[in-house]
Length: 218
Image (cartoon, rainbow, N blue to C red; front, side, top):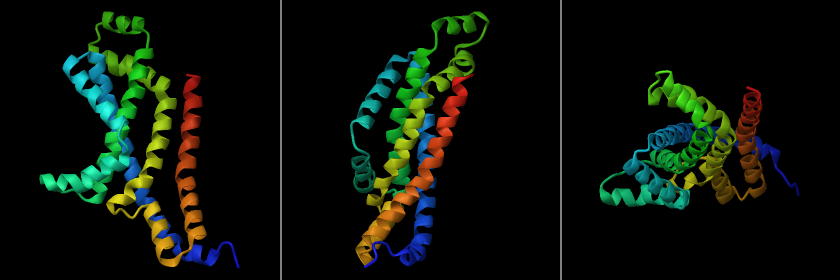
């Protein structure tokens, strides 16, 4: 008896390609929105808006201390009872963004705090506004400093897409479970699942590593 049926893998590989495209699209949107949220929160904290900063702290604590799976259940099953119905893809994007935003915010915050105050004071003394100092002096350095943390968050969020099948999205995990449930081809399904995630994550991981090394010499 063969351990792996490669003819079966060849036949069902288009199904995994389609699922991988959905996973990539979902990860791209979730990561992009997460970075925007993280930058916005870092901007709020840089301006020291007390009330808004406190609200951001509460959001970060809720986001980081609740599993994405529970967040998705709330969005997909609880919100319709409150009159707001979202489809699976919308729930997945919002859930990833909600989770990732808190991690990105902490990464950017640490980067902002690592920039020397003397540089901020120098920018202000040259006549730059506080926003200009943030965007032209602090942000480029903060990004370089926190890039390793941001990279880890990006890989983490891509991996977290593996739970979105709970909201009826035909992602990679959904495709693997479908094959195992119908055809009982567990080895083949898991093989295609692992290979698919490696094809997605490995190039991104290598690219981020190269970017980190490049910026470390700047």
